[in-house]
Image 1 (cartoon, rainbow, N blue to C red):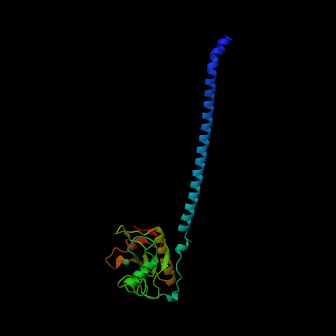
Image 2 (image 1 turned 120 degrees about the vertical axis):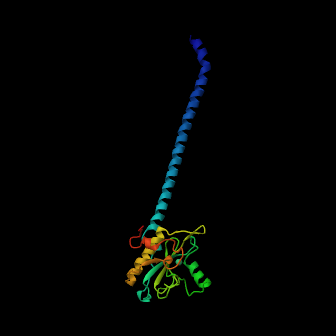
Length: 221
Ligand SMILES: [Zn+2]
């Protein structure tokens, strides 16, 4: 029996060894694969964390009320013309892009129109930054018949794909509110808000200004 067993078992033994070896290598391979995939997951999570941190940092800076973008230019009250009794809002009738900034507008009004300076007193850039335009001791040049009474504020935008559109962002609206609040306090007058379209048949500034609550910054209708 021993010989027979030995005779039967002896050719099977190498096959069993091979199988065991194969199983062993498969086990090692599977463990290696699982370790590798865990490492990849760990790397991608840490990358996402870095991305999220950076994004939230930028977001907080741009939306913060202390952002340097929303700083009101210094105005000396004795250098403000006494005839102003209202604020008139305009848009630039351009796409809301950085290239249509205050200096672009100043060149257009001085070089092309032949005016003394930019027509608006304040300019709200595409990202909400407030820029000084024409000094407040001078009449503006923005609304025919109202330039002696109206302080002109323009925001960059108003056109999308060549078509008129209201493109004012929340950042820009908040900057306009800051301007309005500051001017009302400085001049000690209620300074009601109007849009260019209240005095002329025009799309400017892209919406009805009277529908906007400029004290609480929200739409009324
Ligand atoms: Zn206008």
